[in-house]
Image (tube, rainbow, N blue to C red):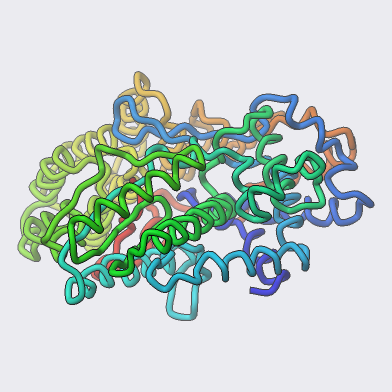
Length: 505
């Protein structure tokens, strides 16, 4: 991309927020208003108090999401728009963008290491940027892994433990400018150096912390790739020094697939990956590290293999309730599996095609709720099925009572803001003033004086009161939504296409 193309791409709503929200959320007007306001300033974000942001907590808005229904958490961040846009503008200045492109040319010079996880923009045949990325994963990771079984005997699988929260922000400047240059005393606070600007801006988002980068945007995924690309190049140097030549590595973000023809080479490369990551303050995840001679089956995730056997076409020729119970059984063994989203989309399609059902919809709704409780990743997909199941409840008051029971079911569980958002998506056209705890729901309900981001650090009053007041809710889209969620709001591909988002931990 050119600098302008990259800037336009990163300022899109779906680049700013790459986790699923209902279609009436649209952050792009706010991002563009911030961009215009910052461009009108002589010194950009510095003129609105950028240096003060690090003194404030909760500058970003964080949606805590539960990964397993129990004690595993993943925070998704809506980065403060002023800091997000400042970073995009800095990154895409002509000289800075050219430097970053040059660095990636260097990072990818080793043809034996494939970086398969750079953000992608949708082509004409892809429904979205996310779908394009998922297709890239399927082609460049899973399918290529199978192809590599023709050349190699062993596969070594591993990933980085707790990657995003563990990133040492100073190491981003090392990756762009080299460690020696970035660590020179005269350069450590030089904001004209793009690596330093990234480092300092991320610290400003996190109360001055130097550990961790926010999750939830394409921008941060891209910055992660700068660091991981640097790790690829450092690993290449180590392997060249050791004379290791017979290997191939596919890296998708923090996941590694290492192909070799000897166990000794596998162990050597594993050690060198470990050493490379340790130098960056990162470490491998021992619980997700394995080695195998069965490259074909090791190339495909276990949940996908089991889903291929379990969810045959005959699966969808039985009752809705029996289909859901099969999903419950599968989810107990493979919680939060990407396969659940695919099968839920198929089930929703089946429900959507029916004008009436012979089954009582209430047990169906109860089972869907159970899947949500134990598989928080599926909130959006379950909401899709739930909205179709509620069609068969004729009484509007009963629908609302069932939604209230679902809300109450989740009260003891923390980190259900995204669930609230999708329940509001279903209920809004029936009863728009149902109260939800999630602040983003308050924006939808037009509750006055809701502040998602901490903006007291902003010294420009007009910027704080006017630009930051730009609505992130498209009222026209909201008013056009009925209580049944459209498949296009949630599903990346038509339900019968064999791609699924399988790229998370």
